[in-house]
Image 1 (cartoon, rainbow, N blue to C red):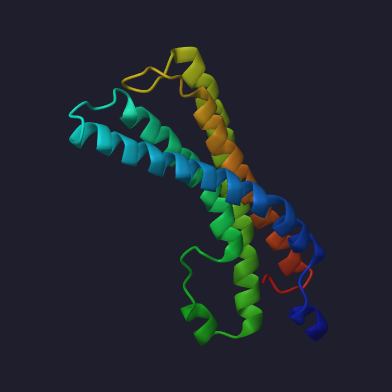
Image 2: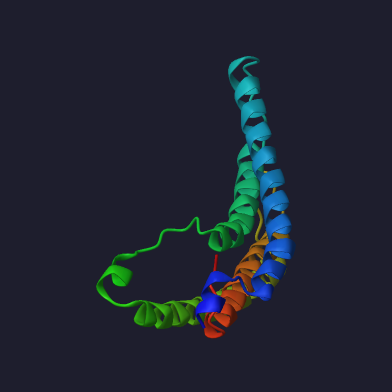
Length: 170
């Protein structure tokens, strides 16, 4: 068991090789698109005194895509907020089981969220939900959010499996 604590589970290596590039590049492209759009909109508004119609819609879309892909990336890389006081008060055995419980609960919550986002995408197409200015349908963006949350659910599931097998998550 002590040997496993110093090694990383092969499934986590697989996750790092597959999900990491998807989330990093897709989120990065969305973030670069958002930055370029904001800079361009500011230049047009204040230099040329001619605001670009529909920039808010595209800002909303790019920001949503950035968030969708950053959740799985930051979850795997340890970029999310954690509370370590429990590990100071209790022993490593209790902390391991609370980590397992939290990963299981998080996986279940992500599955419910994915289900709701897919349903919201279907409803958005059916009821004609669009952005405010350009009236772009919201259906694909609900599905992009569902895809990003599915990536995070996969990360949580494989981290749960690694914890159950006694491996370190780093």
